Amino acid sequence: MVPALRYLGSVCGLARGGFPGGFSAACAPAPGKPWLLCQGGRRASTSSFDVVIIGGGIVGLASARALILRHPALSIGVLEKEKDLAIHQTGHNSGVIHSGIYYKPESLKAKLCVEGAALIYEYCNQKGISYKQCGKLIVAVEQEEIPRLQALYERGLQNGVQDLRLIQQEDIKKKEPYCRGLMAIDCPYTGIVDYRQVALSFAQDFQEAGGSVLTNFEVEDIEMAKESPSRSKDGMKYPIVIRNTKGEEVRCQYVVTCAGLYSDRISELSGCNPNPRIVPFRGDYLLLKPEKRYLVKGNIYPVPDSRFPFLGVHFTPRMDGSIWLGPNAVLAFKREGYRPFDFSARDIMDIIIKSGLIKLVFQNFSYGVNEMYKACFLSATVKHLQKFIPEITVSDILRGPAGVRAQALDRDGNLVEDFVFDGGVGVIGNRILHVRNAPSPAATSSLAISGMIADEVQQRFKL
Image 1 (cartoon, rainbow, N blue to C red):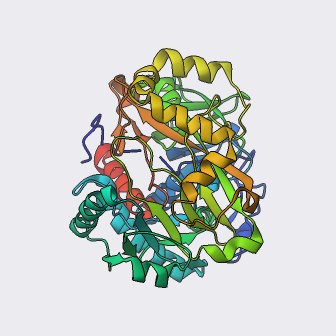
Image 2 (image 1 turned 30 degrees about the vertical axis):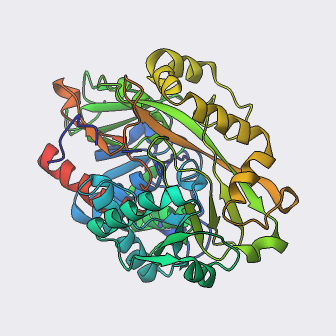
């Protein structure tokens, strides 16, 4: 069983969606087609399930899929906050299929990423989902970075990352003609994919196996039922009541939460531990103008510096042919704050009062100031990009999209660097599994994570 309340990762891939009522497998798209949410299925006011998953991002949908494939006799439902599926972290990430090179050997992040990347490639091949295995170079541009690069290469070997090799300047030029560097790790196993398309395919699998999705269902309360539903023949078979903001309710036996940006609040609603707290960080991307896309062929990343909490700007090709540059990492003033001036008083008060953010700020003050400066002035970001591709100028870039990372923070202001799963105490706590922190590379790892969650659910709830 996965140890409860043990701090094990950092963000990515839990999003939420919504629509009143379910949608049927008949509404599922052909490979490569957009997902259409269709009315039908059970109404929220009358629905009862054996297991409910709260949160419809890539991890929630993968987990729902894994559970129903393993337990086809169970009734399983997914609850979505928005009218569409997978539109927050899943729909706003870089789209990189990570190899697993960065993570501490024997950590869950390392194990699940390496396993998950292989499963994502296999799944995409089975389903006809387009991806590109375009590779990645992690490039040392200064002499002082070379020891860190070599240590990272050894870490990747320990983690079992496929086909890694250290290359010198002449081979860097062969892979990326416009990139300068002294030495690099060539990681050909890294790829790119549209993770929202993958998540919607998981939803299709889930529906075809008999699962239900209730959207536009924003959870407001979770409690034990005081009495059985009127005219119910099941008595107290479904003792947990989940209510939404419209007063509709769903009943179930067990709950799995994959709530991403709201994982701490959903835990509190159920009477479980609110820690670790979620602090939202916005990552702003720049776009390379179409006429300059020839400058970048694959992913180009910096050598990570353990003194700083985030990776730094990098070059990311996308499935649509665009090139994303970035991201930075600045505090978001709203949990779904994709624009610089998005603001929520409640979210800000939670950040200031309940999280360890103030301690994190003091520990990384200069880094934070630098990130804010880069967010305001394009020339500052371009200066960092020019370390790798000197030809890039301010006139070659445009402001692009942004994502919000659900960063889990402990009370001492430390980033939680691995996956966190826990339940609670008492009658209701014993019926809930919270996925409290599913950090990047959660999208890459989603199929591996879902298998682990299915194992934990089976053991915890004796399914």
